[in-house]
Image (cartoon, rainbow, N blue to C red; front, top):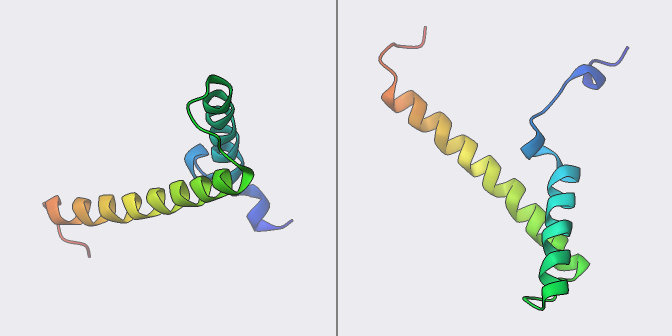
Length: 73
């Protein structure tokens, strides 16, 4: 059995989940006349969100190491 099939990830790291959320928000924005969001715009927003999650996770890890009171060892 392939090991990667048993691995899970948080929902916010899922391109599919973020894509559906962005699509839903974009649909509401288009229907209400707030903004016209194209499929290319939606893909760019999902990519931006995934990058932001990665940067946020890196920042959180650095912050955790800075405020830790015990050494790694």
